Amino acid sequence: MKIGVVKEIKNHEYRVALRPSGADQLIKDGHQVMVETGAGTGTSFTDDQYREMGCSIGADAADVWASCDMIMKVKEPLASEWPHMREGQIVFTYFHLAADEALTRGVLDTGAHCFAYETLESDGKLPLLEPMSEVAGRLSIQAGAKFLEKPAGGIGALLGGVPGVAPAEVAVIGGGVVGTHAARMAAGLGANVTILDVDAYRMRYLDEVLPKNCTTIFSNPTSIKECLTKADLVVGAVLLPGAAAPKLVKRGDLADMKAGAVIVDVAVDQGGCCETTRATTHEEPTFVVDDVVHYCVANMPGAVPRTSTFALTNVTLGYARKLARLGAKDAIHGDRELASAANAVGGKLTCAPVAQAFGMEFIEPAAAMG
Image (cartoon, rainbow, N blue to C red; front, top):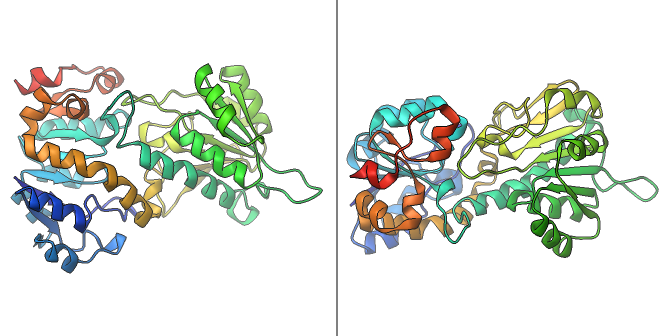
């Protein structure tokens, strides 16, 4: 199979889907690898490093898309990339379709086989989503601390306080991977942290493993509102795999929050867990609603591409090798993990939560493939 790696074109997205060492393994598996010129520069990988591994270098994105049977990316294809996609071509990347109906219909129209990192399930976990959730959870506190500063529009609070001055209050909505890493970072800086979740077993686990300045609270509308009124920083860390995030922070709740408080909605890739969330970019990361600063960057890990690329490709490479070896049909019929990643097959929508989000027809991946 001929595998292509294209340069990411999302605003300030510097990650790359395949490291030179990964390309070497795919080539040793008997595949050809073509990399768009400059695809790895954001992560400090040169074209020569890919050439040394046996890759060919495509002149531009159109060259790679047209030449390859399988495309590896990091972020969802933007509208300008849809015309390059074609029927039967495999695209392996993050899609987050439930947050974007236009994207969903756009990739369906291409007839490509779309395998999404974020829905690939193994033993009840999401192994290709977890590393970026870890990065985003940690980054959410760095970003929150920055935008709590007065020159950045925040209330002017230091997360850890100082002797004689109380630390900031941080509320983390969701106790999964993002929430756990956010809580650990905030607690490490000395903040008072409250984590809200609906899973009693998860909260018992968090109570055991997190520092004593972290408190777990059962999540419901009342407890969320109470935490919002006290919080200097709120991290939205809710995930329903493959589905749109529930809107747990209502527009009216902002009136009860402190002026200059910050919301970092990490769930923005799935539409966000705040009613006021809209996707922003690293170029213009924040906006203000009712005196509350919103940070809703849809590709947070792209800000630290070196760490993020290594963390992501550590887990994606094995599945990419298997997908390339099997091809789309055998992967869907014979591999449960890869089948769980199939979101669109030959123009048919094969992810139930996405179909539910937009009232569209859902078809099982095996049936769609035939």
